Amino acid sequence: MLQSQDERVAICYPLDNDALLRKQKFLRRRLLTRENIHYIDKKIALLGGVTTAEFKNLLEIFLLDSGIRPTFYESEYNKYYEDSVFPNAALDDFAPDIVFLFTGVANLLHLPDIKDSEKVVQEKLDAEYQRYETIWKSLAAKYPAVIIQNNFDPPPFRPEGHLDATLPQSMARFVSVLNEKFAVYATTNDGFYVHDFARVAAEIGLAKWHNRFQYHAYKFAMNYDVIPDVAWSAARLIRAILGKTKKVLVLDLDNTLWGGVIGDDGVNGIALGHETPTGEAFTEWQQYVRHLKERGVLLAVCSKNDEETAKEGFSHPDSVLHLEDFVAFHANWEPKNINIRQIAHELNLGLDSFVFIDDNPAERAIVRELVPEVSVPEVDPQDISSYIRAIEGNGYFDTASLSADDFRRSQTYHENRQREELAESVTNYDDFLRSLQMEAEVGVFRDVYFDRIAQLTNKTNQFNLTTRRCTLADIRQMTNDENYITLYCRLKDKFGDNGLISEIIAEKRDDEAHILLWLMSCRVLKRGVEDLMLDELVARARGKGCKALVGYYFPTKKNKVVADMYSDFGFTLLEENDEGTIWELPLISYERKNQFIRVQENAS
Image 1 (cartoon, rainbow, N blue to C red):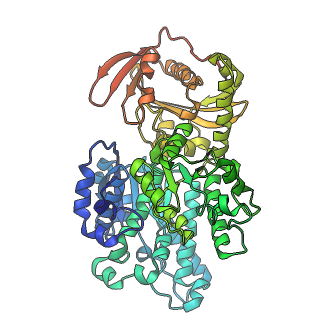
Image 2: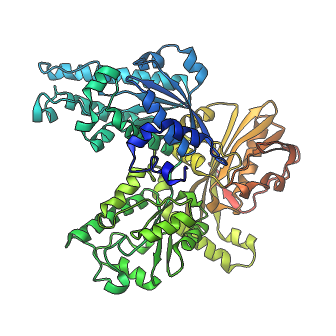
Image 3: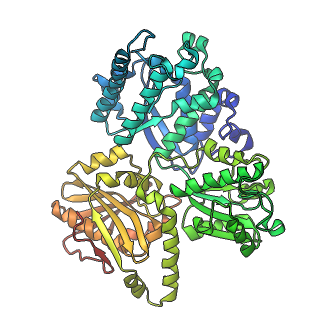
């Protein structure tokens, strides 16, 4: 990200829309000339029903700032239907990774009339919805791409007044029903996402959102002044789809999770509960944090405090959060930058996946200065809701999908702590691995795991040999292609279920299987999963008539842990170039390596 205050002021929440609109070229140039940035390159087809040039420019800036380098195909004005449904050689050649359908309420064709019967209104709704479903299905059939669709912003006028909210013939009801139908389609179709255009309009306010002169003159879907807000929202969704979101929320305690100072006021003196406005605000904030934890965000404490005293705060009868909700708890008198680095070490996660919330501006400044990888938003301790706004406004924990593994992520880290304690109690590592009683489910990619497979692909940085990023559409395409070998692994042991923690994608080329992707969650590192996965890959490759594996290692700042993996497994170095290294393993004399993990017999 850009680091100088003059540059950062424009590209962080709350947005400085005026600066963004004035400095577009400058910001783009600075972002593209940064050094040591490992970009994810993505081709985005922007199919608009309105003018999209300014939106595209701002979207590019926000994506570049997030480490995503987009290349755009932009449709002609209002040609989104034609580009989607009819043959389009230019779009075919572009081969998009993402198709973004940028439409709004101005693009509705089958409009209700006040004199329509409810049957006629329903027919118009069906016709309008079918027009969009035809677009989505046509795109999905032609391209292995993620599809993003705006839902509809509220209409600019309401001639029926308050009846607009209830009258079937009103535009407001018409738009509301269409948006619900879009949402249902998204929940039942992999690789399709709704960009919540309506929510962005609501946050901005309709009086500021609609500018009828600009629509009539320039065909802008919304006021020119708020285009940065729309591009920011779209960038957040694309970041989430590509796994570029945060994983850990690190929290101070006093005046951050409760009002007051636990060491001075005692457990009965801190502000929590519904008796006072301050207590109620902190309770609402704790409820929000707990919700994040329930859907997979890891929580940690970093507080200058006596540990036992600090823990007493969670015994307050109105505390929504409890000690077991946190995967790491550091309450001591060490500098917070040191404690945060220790938490990252304990969790084996990169510091750039951390967000730190603290009411004290001096502590925020120290962490920003000494641990610059950590995101530290500005908050106002006089307005506890600003903590929530800082998280949501920056989109730190935006998610494009949820899996069963997300809901038990915090529990998984607690179970991992038990495994570490067991490892410390035994002197022979092989005995430790046997004592875990590990059992694996290994098989080809399955629909039920697609969300988790895509998530793991886009979020795993350390044990990841090529750091190739895949969307749901990519995964589905390779799963259904006989030229690819796909493998996933779920791992259980006596402490619990680790979930889906490893995957491999290999492509058959003549009599070789080329390993395009091999990754694993670092929380199961050195437990034999890599041995098991290589065994299974060799077996599948032999089944397809392959005589050798070819592996690739593309080094990044984060994946040094696997730098020697191929040599350790007996691969021979074939080539070394600027991108990385290429390795080969003949299969004729390969012997199975897994010793400690039992594979389920019914795994595919």
